[in-house]
Image 1 (cartoon, rainbow, N blue to C red):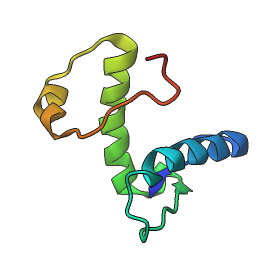
Image 2: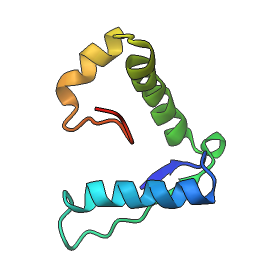
Image 3: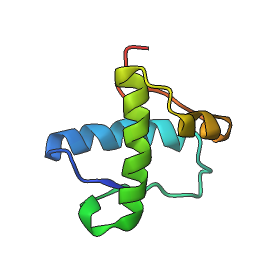
Length: 86
């Protein structure tokens, strides 16, 4: 898995532990989980995902309900807030 490198070393370790705990229970035992943190400026795929995630951020932080989110809501299998209150 490749994610945007926007955290410091300690935050990366915490994030990897949290994400690993969430995903390893859902992955088959024979599938390894490797998490790589890369600069999104050098990765077009990360830029696209970043745009999508910005919309998710707007939904939770500002109460926006964008049209694109309603269009994709049925395709989302799992949704939770990272370190959220809910």
